Image 1 (tube, rainbow, N blue to C red):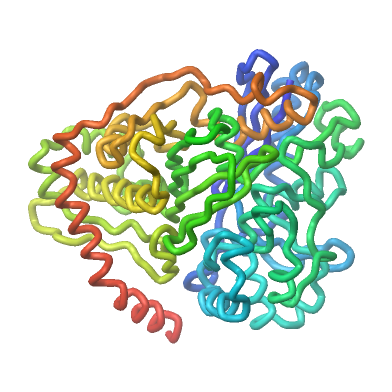
Image 2: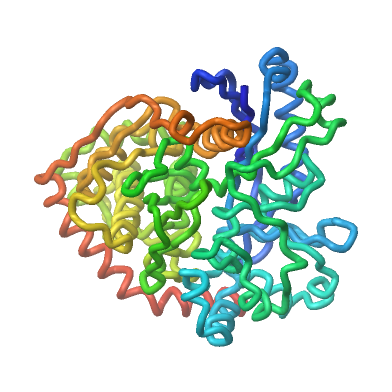
Amino acid sequence: MYLGIDLGTSEVKFLLLDAAHHIVASVGEPLAVQRPQPLWSEQNPAHWWAATDRALTRLAAEQPQAMRAVRAIGLSGQMHGAVLQDARGEVLRPAILWNDGRSGAECAELEAALPTLHAITGNLAMPGFTAPKLLWVKQHEPELFARMRRVLLPKDWLREQLTGEAVSEMSDASGTLWLDVAQRRWSAEVLAACGMDESQMPRLVEGSEVSGTLKPALAARWGLTAGIPVAGGGGDNAASAVGIGAVRPGEGFVSLGTSGVIFLASDRFRPNPAHAMHAFCHALPGRWHQMSVMLSAANGLRWVKNLLGAHSEAALLDTVAALTPLQRAQAPVFLPYLNGERTPHNNPHAQGVFFGLNNEHDAAALAYAVVEGVTFGLLDGWHSLGTAPGEVQSLSLVGGGARSALWAQLLADAIGVPMVTRQGGEAGGALGAARLAWLADGARIEDVCLAPPVAAVFEPDAARAAQLLPRHRRFRRLYAALREEFSATSATGAAG
């Protein structure tokens, strides 16, 4: 039995996986995000730990035999977050999250100060990455920066609570902008450009290696065996890839979680920073991946559901499914940039926009516009990956949005690649974390990293793709027309 823990943004999830690839149990605990100022996004790490304790205490009560059988633990989590600690290991401030946009000026500063940045990291400096966040702290909270002795990513802070070890792994470390991604090691050059050094970084392991062992008191508290290993684990998307079996070149997935991701595995480092595409290490040794990222995906559907007072996302999507092709073609166009955007725009100031509203539009039309807008954002990311025709045979669909057949078909039509949903695909990073624990326990990649059984296949439809094309062109023109207005509006809001 293997325990996977996935520290997400809106929830921390826990999954028990047996040696026959069956998910024995899964539970989750909700988390909240604090936004004390425009562009800011923060969480208190103490809340992560409290949620972890509640969930594992519950699992111990509900699944005592399974918990006693756990042989190893794996970790997955939201990437890029910054947990700052002092010399005693105390947290100095709320964690600055992946979707925080405050460090745009610091990104420009880092790019100017270090011309070799792209060659070392393979990525643009973006506000979502960890390094610019620390430059922001250095500039705006200098006394706190001077006290900082270590910075940890969210799941790695959780690891430290579990094991007492300060460790990260290659996939999550790639998202800091401090890693030499090709060489899989911290870059002294990039750290120095941020006024830091390697002594402030956690030790690095591969995701399938042992990073430490569970503290005896915690093992006793949760009904686990003393001394069980904790695997390196992976950033949420790399772990999801392990869970979905996307570990060989050309294999990948689309994630419709809070954010939206297209992920492609590779056997080599393939950077393309000019198009804001991410090139990171995979969670397995000797493997890398490319990734396009948009900051609002299923989050956009949740937002419009709340805005419209709908009973649920599923109920709202039922009304969308009833729309005729003509009604879809006449729906407003939606720019889905509710939290700024990464790929391909690298613009923290980008904002959400409904364009073309009239008296005939109802809740279904607005909801369709949101789903379509997120799809178009992912399509722009797909183009940034630069795949050759036929290079990718299909993409698995994961995340909460994967439950929607309507959305799956829309993605297949727009991107032109079959979308495959898989049994247990909604488990995402927690399943991958459990599999990485399994590997750390001595199993082989070819035995563990299997693709789960297919639930459904959504083939692209050329006629529907042709109907989407003019709306996608309008979508792109609309962003281009509003780009300067976004920056002006953001500056006015900050001044106020």
